[in-house]
Image (cartoon, rainbow, N blue to C red):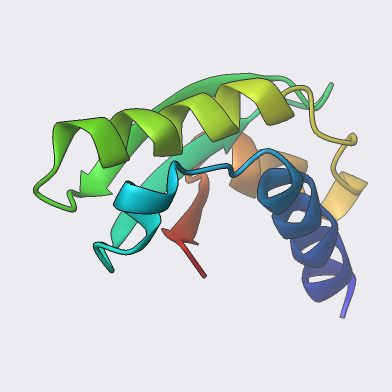
Length: 93
């Protein structure tokens, strides 16, 4: 439950920074990114783990993550997991 709530907060923050040009949004591309989040909420690392096959789309994924940083501080029980294993986000959903 705590993870779900925190993850929902992160997703909302990311979605507010996810702005694609219409030509790219209509391409129906998908990608996955892994993000390591420090105890202070800062993004320590982010990388594409499943590329859309389109460099511009993948760059927009990373840009949305960068614009969203810092995230809220993770709950104490999630700090180690997020710092070491990270969290995977699907784009666009």
